[in-house]
Length: 482
Image 1 (cartoon, one colour):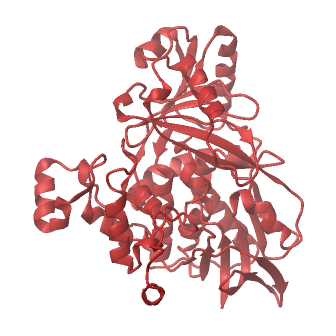
Image 2: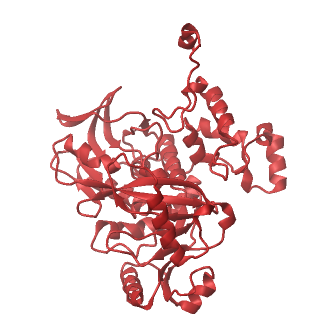
Image 3: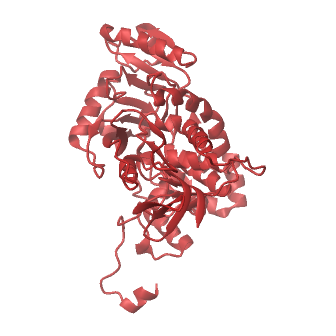
């Protein structure tokens, strides 16, 4: 089967490229090694939509971030994922750091970042009274925001599929060959052919490039540990709080998430591609630092912790462009602000494909919108009564911490959820204070019933992440028939 373009990698970048190409009359397939999109770096992202003043203007990331930021209000409205433009403040903890704020402001204004303001200590503490009283000042950027990155990922791929993009999951790429004017991609179950291959494989991008003989860049996975706090901490800050950035990181942040919780992190540690552990040392470093910004934060309020890997290239910049191998395009080294830049990256890759010879004719029937799963917890009491009258399954609460109904869970499964994490990221079942202690079994039952799978086949996140094992005394003939 010959495709016009095959995208390797189903993170937010691959999904953004897929959605952009679905506007045109071309045949596109997205190939993802995990059981669902967004299960790599994207699900462990801080969820920040950056204003754009951090990245140097001479870098590709600096050129794409402001355009990406401007795209998010419309993108969120079309795809139905949550987005709040809460703003951000870079905080100087002492007078020595104040010149860095002025330099960031000048950089941002040169790049067209709107609304940047320098705040003195009095203004800063009036706006964010829970900051340390010793802070010296801050740089406010109103266009920064927060999203749930996995919701964005699901919305992008759902819309791309509505418009004709094919999706292959559980399909790790084993090899790529160049033959007869196209590229052949081998997975465990398929051999695919494409005129263009787009390498958006995140921390694995250098390995994918090496499959076609390209070794001109390296990727170093950089682990970031994040800590989610109980909802009782909601409102301790109203904006994203940054420290003055260091040379290799924007630092450890305090983030008011879209759903109202507070998240702190990340760390920055170079590791191998398999290390997504959280550590006592990581927790200590995160909380020791963020308490210099917001003293009332405490590790005892942690309800969840996780780690993700950033794909850091040896140039410390995005690597996007055609290569010496005809038809093979790298979209690699996409670390922060990659999430923010994703819509702009999609358009950037579209233009590269056009320059490389792919004919792009806009479709008259492109549909830009998806119907999001209605969130029962956000409805008024009258709206809840009406919902229950229309769908009795809405009266059955599956996740009591987040007030997620059976109706929401079923719709998430129908939209593509295949795992507990797939449900968690789509409708928040299991994200609350008890972290799934109440709802896990019912979610597994609904997955089993809806997908026609035995309960022991249901996993947390695919692969070998089973929660139930078959009975040792089960009849093997019965098990085989199931």
